[in-house]
Image 1 (cartoon, rainbow, N blue to C red):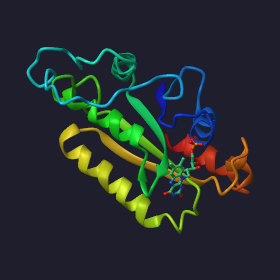
Image 2 (cartoon, rainbow, N blue to C red):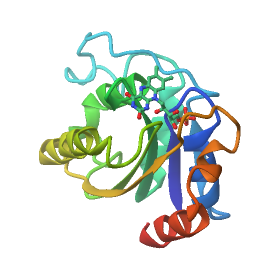
Image 3 (cartoon, rainbow, N blue to C red):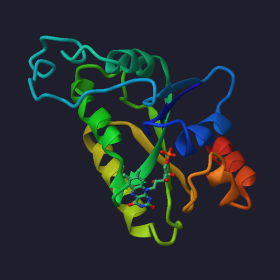
Image 4 (cartoon, rainbow, N blue to C red):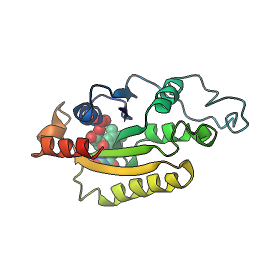
Length: 179
Ligand SMILES: Cc1cc2nc3c(=O)[nH]c(=O)nc-3n(C[C@H](O)[C@H](O)[C@H](O)COP(=O)(O)O)c2cc1C
C-alpha cells in the first residue's frame, strides 16, 4: 500500500505516471484538487501548540494520509531548473516531523521527476533535486529512493509523456517494480 502524491497543480504528466504505477489499495493525493498554503512561520508546531500545523487547509488531510502509509511516492515536475514550488511548500509544512514520527520517520520516500527537456539536458537539475532530498534525510529520517526521470518533451498534449518515450510502458513498469 502506497501514498502517491501528485505535486503538480494539474492532472497531466506526473498524475499519469502515478496512475500507471498505482495498485488497487494505493491512495492518490493530487495538488490539483487540494490547495496547500505556504508555512507562515508562526512556529506553533515547534512550540507544541498544535499537533501538525495551525493552518487549517488541505495539508491536514495529507498529514492524516501520510501517517497511514509506509511508502510515499512523490511525482514532481521541474519548474525553472528545480523542483516545483508546490513541492517546496509541502516540505516546509512538514516542520513538525520530529514531534510526529508517524509522518516520515524510517519510511520509504520515492521520487519521480518529469521535465520538458531530455534526461541528459536536465542531469544537473536532477542531481540538485536528489541531493536536496538526501540532505532532508539527515534530519527528517526517511529513506530516500530516486526512482527516475521522464521527459514530456515540448508537446502539451494529454499523452505527451507517453508519445515522447518510445519505451514508456517499460519505464513505468520498471518504476512500479522498484517501489
Ligand atoms: C512554470 C514552468 C516551468 C518549467 N520549467 C522547466 C524547466 O526548467 N525544465 C524542464 O525540463 N521543464 C520545465 N517545465 C516543463 C514541465 O516540467 C513539464 O512539462 C512536466 O512534465 C509537467 O508535469 P505535469 O504535467 O505533471 O505538470 C516547466 C513548466 C512550467 C509550467
